[in-house]
Length: 147
Image (cartoon, rainbow, N blue to C red; front, side, top):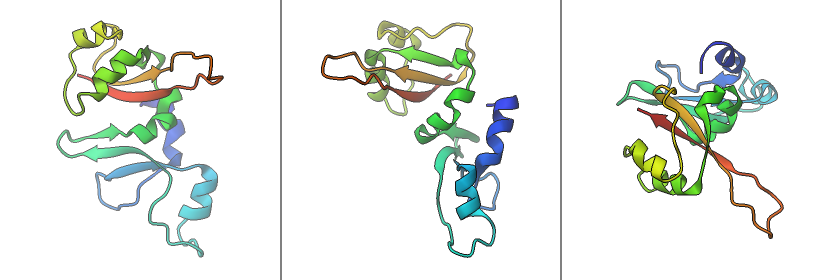
């Protein structure tokens, strides 16, 4: 995230620690921030709240988008980084947590990554197969990093 997308999101992000780099950035709506997170809130001593958007990864010295934060940033990520994927690709990715999955294996599973997309964050959309018993076609998003 950068530029206008980050500028729009920044006022809704907050951290609970005072050190830098902050361990976790969370997202909260304006109403929630005003009611629960304002300095000197007389009713609550808020310890945690909001949606965890990203977490500091000391090994990489970078922030890592958390799955819970995907819904917050999804519409702010450029369209060339939002891709539709088939469930064989999802199965392949979930069967190799923390490991690199080769692009040729993803292509074989039905996910061809555009060569024009540089390394970094990609959001993959998975939609369930339509079935007669389901009137809903809601899917979900998965955040991955292209190396």
